[in-house]
Image 1 (cartoon, rainbow, N blue to C red):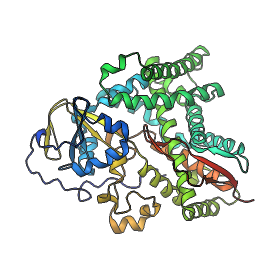
Image 2 (image 1 turned 45 degrees about the horizontal axis):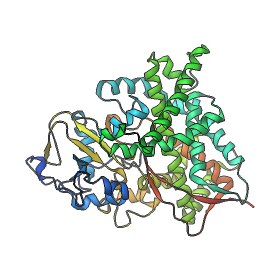
Image 3 (image 1 turned 60 degrees about the vertical axis):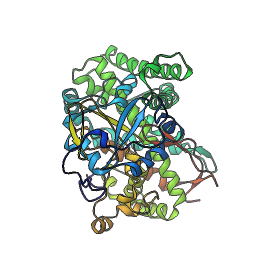
Image 4 (image 1 turned 60 degrees about the horizontal axis):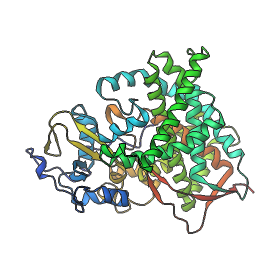
Length: 465
């Protein structure tokens, strides 16, 4: 079952060609305009991060541009070539950077934050937990049951906050995959505190670490949210050990306990999986509902294929790769609303884009901005067009880069899980329901792990009155 991204990134010819034949120093990298004294580009990032990140390619040279986070220079890679050099070709010269340093306050030293030997060891232990076989035998039926339970509560004419609704589904699904059974109180606590922690985390990552210690409202909210989230995970692990169920392998926690990891590491790994799976999937599903409402021709095509494939029978995991129209619709959402901004740090001098970066240099990249680059995706790069992923279009124009799940050794371990979860859920819901957008309402993008909507009111209508 092929559940990877639409295509591997092309390594040349799809962005600004790197013309340098001999490496030069960082002084050759242009700085983006608009930096404030002492604060650098932090005000621009805080005011409108999406517009700022999209603007950086205009000021780059050889796929690199410098921004200032306070007094810290960050060299932002803006092309497929330079991003792929960082993530794949020269990945051994990098460790997780400033953003991941700050993420440890929320998720410890889990897989997303680990470097080098620690990452390789954790990845080797955890990869079997996300195999296609494990997804099919352990998670798919639970995903289907959760989706059906969610839709069973919908009523014709009911108004939903769709992002909240999708977050509920995503949190419940990843929680039950991790812990088998969780109480409604736990699900509610995570849904209340996780957005607070993630929103504050991004602001902290762009600010000097010294400010984390100030007793201001922003820090108090973050610390309180993290304490609540950590306490929940630790209590679940403790309860499992106390019940003598450490050999239960029906969920991810049981598999983690079986590896022999210390409880602190198990907490970090469970937290990483929980938070990343809940936040990203909920946002992507919400955006997909909005685009399907705005593009009824796409929705009709997706629904027709679902009906043709499934008929009157229940969906199974074998149907996931057959729903190609839904996959294209989903991939286009992931392209448009991918990871906002990530960073790496050099562990030795390394050449990127013909420029030699010194050891300790911070390098950033925005998949959100990269995937909206007209040089890669054409004049309609900012538009929702799932047909760009049709096989015949790919053959004519060449494979489009798609790095939403990362690349190389640090590629997202939950990619297949996420695609299966989203496909099963949307196919289940779309068979019986459609959601109608509130006229004139345009959801505002909120920077988080991915671009998520702030509020998305939609009305439930039965597909077959």
